[in-house]
Each structure stands twice: as C-alpha cells, then as structure tokens.
Image (cartoon, rainbow, N blue to C red):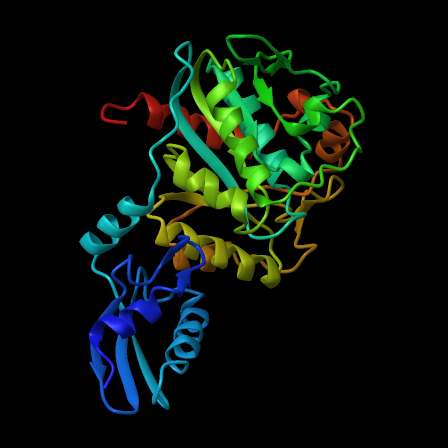
Length: 352
C-alpha cells in the first residue's frame, strides 16, 4: 500500500494558480486517508468560495490516479481559519522591494476592475486630480503595461520618462501629479507592448523600485483588467493598503468584479468600496436620470464584497471628451469630489 509520503509527494505537483505554490507547501491537504485502491482527503481553501477550487481538485485527482493501484479519489472542501489564512498568505508574500532612498510614500491604493471598458483608468485619473486639488502630493503608477492609457488621459507626450544613475524621473502634469507608464517610454503611443507575464511583472517592480517619486501622500496604482500576473504581482509585492473596485451596471461587469473580489479576499487585501461608473445619464433638458445600461447592481456587488458603494458616476459626454483630449485635469464631478474629500479625511484621521 502507498505511504503517506508518496501521496504527499504526488500532491506537491499540484499548484494553487493564484498563489503560485503547491498544495502541500501551503498546508492545504488535511485528513488524508489511504486505502488499497482509494485516497481521500480534505482540500482546505483560503476562502470557502475560492473560484479555482474545482480546478485544483481536478489537478490533484489526476496526479493521484497516476499512482499504482489507485482507482478512486474522494476530495472534500474545507476553509482555513482567519489566522491560518494570514499565516499562509504571509508565507507566500515575497519581501517587499525597497523604495529608492529618496522616496517617501504615504499610502498606496489600487483601482481594479474585473473587465476592460468600465472606465477604470479615467476613474483613477479623476481621483488623482481631486486629491491634488486638495493639496495632496499624488502619483500614479500605470500597471496596465500592455494597455496603458494614463498618458493619453493627461495629455503627456511619449518619451516623457528620463533616467539617470539615481533613478527614473516620472512625468509631471500641470497639477503636479507624477505619472509613470509604459506608454511614456514609447515615442509612438499606439506602438504595441507585446510582453509576456514575467517581463510585465518585472517592469511593474522597476516602476516601484527605480522611480524617483519623492514625497507622496498617495500613490494610486491603475491595475490592468482581471486577475492576471500583473495584478497578482502588485498585490503580493507592493504595500497596497486597499483597493477600489470599478464596475458598470451590466450584470456581466458585476460577475467579473466578483471574481476580482474573490482574489482580493484570498490575499487579505482590503476592499475600500465599489465605484459604479456609467451608472446613469442625467438629461440636461429634464434633469431626470436615465439608466442607459440597465438598473444598478452596485449594492449587490458591495454586499458580496462586504463593503459599500462609495460613489455612482454618471455618463457625461463632456468628461469623455476631456479625457480623449488629454484634459482630465479640467473635469469636475461632484461625485468624485465627495470621494476625494472622504479619502483625505480618512488619511488625516488619527491611526490611519
């Protein structure tokens, strides 16, 4: 009959795709029982609703059925306690890269969406603008390496990054917002950045390590859509204090945002709130709101994420036009002003 060590050795070939380590190293195999032709165990997940649980279970089943004499594999699911989850996730977080000695960054916040096209980058830019208007020193790290749009929104020219022995200088907008983006390294803004995951992850870390950010009150990270390598790199290697989730009223957008939320819960990253973009159109003639993309599902998403809806942004053609023209710093939305005020009060509160 197979030994405990042989079975665990087989299971060590099965990885948690999001955490990048095997199930044995993560202590996710419990209550292992071995019989002549069968193996049973409990797969203990970081959260009970882990979206990849069936994927991991199937990979484990395939590995075990390769063992001599094994014909049946029974897998049950369990969930780690809060303390176990913190210990496990702490063990997979690499050491945070050291900031350039000249940098002093107060808080690092990310803006994330489940899918593209929901206005995540424009939301990031408008939030940065509102914080800057309130006297904060703000930076934007554009982590959407292959689909960077931040320079276009701010009207920054290509080739706008300069470096030296001490580090890389960010581009600076008229309001003093410091911006780093892959598109600032290109002379033509529509040139393709056809990089694979490791190169993208390496560039994000260089943006953190090598850029001379100086003193910032807030650094906003504009993440690429979904839960790709770039997103996991940011969450596991940068000191992110919290994430805003951007969605739109369509149910499809809500579905993929919940996927993103599940990843954040697994990584123990706080969700600061849900921002619903393109929520409604206010008719200038009647002053009535019209749900162009259907009824809002923001509160349902917020409930799933155990957070709140921090703002709902209207469809505003003028905002779209200003962003397209690189004039986002001229945008004024009361909803974004309120969010920025709330964030500033929170930052200045004792203990924050």
